[in-house]
Length: 216
Image (cartoon, rainbow, N blue to C red; front, side, top):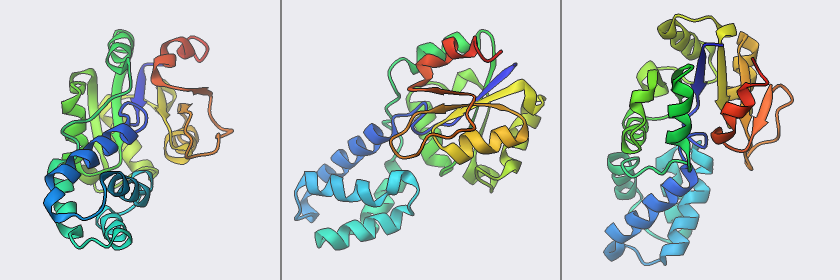
């Protein structure tokens, strides 16, 4: 095994904390235009984002309808302009990446907007660990389409059998990489059922160095 390819959100980035922190600050920015309470605002928008998979404008529209607010467009444009600049990574991520980079080539494949995902990566200072970073908006294709994985492998000049993928989504981060010939580690998530296809299961990337000893 020569390379480890990471998902970003809920693998390296604590998306839940990042989003809640953003919404807390967003409420303060729009306080004069909102009538709901902050906790109501955060809870409603967060739920309607559906773990990041919902269209963000639709999520704001649904939340504003629920809360009887009328500034969904303004909130959405603020989200596009600012989200990601204050990302929160899981504890120990930078230390773990430092350790792994001594023995493996590292890469990222992530779905999302280029500006938001790049902002997250830069705000926590991890870009220098990765030989290549593939973001779906920049590539015009997203996980689990195999093409975005092939482009990453091409950049690394490696075969699937030389790579391991780690992430929280059972399809995009486990089943598709496994079908292509990679090993795959699933990061346990409350949002998904455990995939039988995973070569290993961890609670966080901090467990990966120890886990790799059993996967070589």
